[in-house]
Structures are given as structure tokens and as C-alpha cells.
Length: 170
Image 1 (cartoon, rainbow, N blue to C red):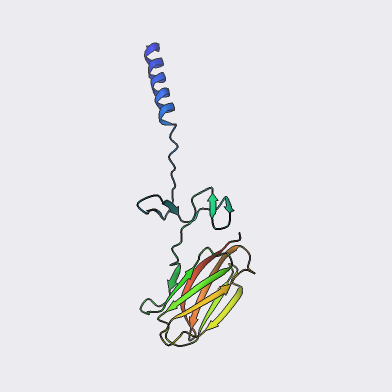
Image 2 (image 1 turned 60 degrees about the vertical axis):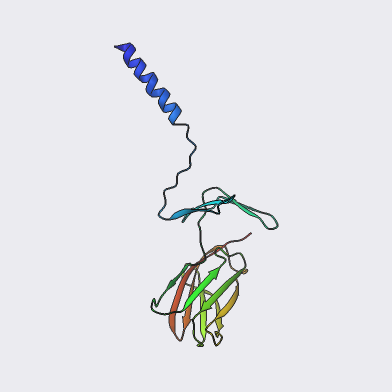
């Protein structure tokens, strides 16, 4: 009986050692996915994980640690879903210069407000879209600290879009 129990323990222990050697990565997240370009580039992404360290050279940036949040530039929430008004922000995360592209805005004056997480307005920009309702605005955010911010785009005293923005430094 003792030999049988010892044999079972050895077999189970050996199986545990062999199956416990997996180095496959697992992430529990509410959002994520993968991109594969068909030849040599594979990117896995999840939302909400923090950065451990970032190394950069002339035109390359490598972030090591946990998988990084992915943002495809469509980080806005349209406040009036029936409206054709559309705003695109990029890059996000941003280092210094943020591009805001507005489509289907009509010709009324628009305002962009940037708020920190405490609700304080830290930047503002006014612009008038062209006759075709298109506008491209560049915001200089180099003076801001690394943090998360919120952008509100107003037109004719109506809130049109709200977006989350992440400011990073290099």
C-alpha cells in the first residue's frame, strides 16, 4: 500500500513539474486583441495596463514590462450620435503636439478645452472650420505634465465630443 501511494505521489509530482514549466503569457483584461500584418509584425495589446520602462532612440521606441494600452486614435465619445460632427485625435498617447481633425462641423466657431483630472482647464483653443466643415488644429502640450487629460469640443455652446488623452514624456 505504501509503495502504491509513493508511486502515485511520484507520478503526480513529476506531472506537476513538467506541466508547471509553461512560459506562455496570460493577461486577464476587459479589452484587447492582436494584430498581425501577414509577414513579420505581430502586436498584442490590452487596455489599462501600466508601463514599466520606455527606451527610445532616434526613431524607435521600446516599452518593456506589461503589455501596453492600445489606442487607435478613435478615443472620442460623440455627445450627439445623430450629428455628423466627428473629431479624431492623434497621436494618443501624445508627447508634445496633438493633432485634432474635425469633420462635418459646419462653419460655426468651435472651441477645444483641455482639463486635468481635477477638472481644471489647462488649455483652450478656438477655431473656425472651413466652408467644407473641415478643420485641423495642432495643440502644443509640451508645457503639460505627464498625466491623463480630458478634451471637450464645443460648438455653438453645445458639447459635441469628449475624449480621453494621455500625455507622456520622452
